[in-house]
Image (tube, rainbow, N blue to C red; front, top):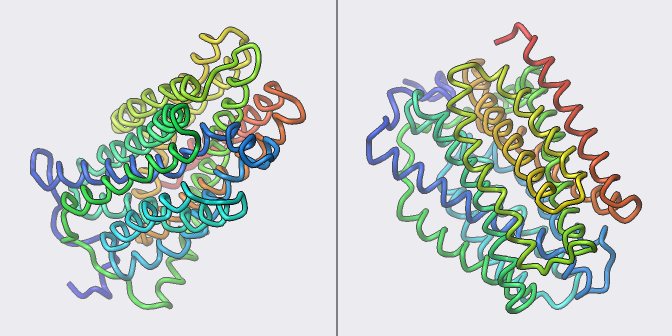
Length: 408
């Protein structure tokens, strides 16, 4: 079939099926890539109080260590997504992992706060390679019956990566400070990059998109579809709420009445294990009951978790984080798969649609994470809960509207 007549998101033939080695290798490689990318992206989150002390900056300023990377990652998605539709997925993925790991080593030896922020910004651009191509790669290279489940596995790798960055980062910070923490996570990134290079099957079903005119038409289609726009909005609102809670949680847990050390704060992020499970379970339930039901139900669970964190006893606060995390990753896993399916069925470029979804996801992370620092400085934990609850309820309204939409 002529490449000009077949968009890259609808390749001919069938992809790797359940039980085949190619499916196992692709799923494991993308899973490991997710661990590396999100460990490197979010390791500063558990280090925010220590960074504030080390560089003599405010709580709100310290959140920039996370926000600057997520903001530059969002920009990188707008570039790498369209490039992947023309040039392929795997080269971008391998290059981004290698560059991000190398930059992580440089972050660990940054002499000043300004240098650290600059390196984190460039690292965010490199980290954009994975979210820009992962969903499109899995949809192209795997059979349709297993691609949604594999995307759920990818999201679970994201959750475990976020957990690893925070948990291992906190433990390393107790041993050698923030430099040991960021350097150790960078070495983890190097190891995962090597494993992905060995494991990831080469693309067999990728067909390049035609030249610029077609790309621009595909982009216009991806930003005018009402269902896709609603999913982009959900991504920004949900991620803004989620990161706001976790950014501010590090300050709350190191403050009275808890007064936890960074290593113990990192243990609280074991709640991310529930996210790893809920993203996979959410994908299974979506196949049974439909995405239109699963997304708002998951968001409602998330809202309940945010409210529960208002409780003063530490076990109840941790329980709130667990509920919040489970609801968030279930909603995100189902919504990201929905984007890929929606774009593919409407003849749109999956890479562009997935990149736009991720763009708004990380815009929400950058904005919500920064606002969380200000909310904590000005109103403490109740102000953070008010911010996160407002964003989550807004996402719930959007999801309910999507559920009533007749467009499929």
